[in-house]
Image (cartoon, rainbow, N blue to C red; front, side, top):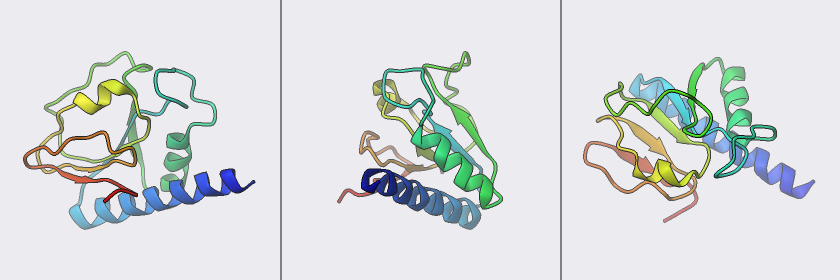
Length: 124
């Protein structure tokens, strides 16, 4: 029960940060990686889907993209987003994000990029 509560608390915290950043910066939200674990395509029990549901309850819609599940390729020229890294797929660490995006990275995998704000949750 403690592990489940911890997981839910983290999901609520990430959703809250994304919600605030989205409203303050007038940006849509994208969850990048929604598989249950890195390297898998299974989504049952995915923390990213929990975050999506929390955001929905807050009245926020968000887009979802997972490079191992979705057929579409990552578009480096997309509009800026508040991007939540929802799954620690290795390939996501190499993505380039649109200028003025805000990346919420609970895994600490996203390197600094010019014109991008990276918020490494739970890390100094």
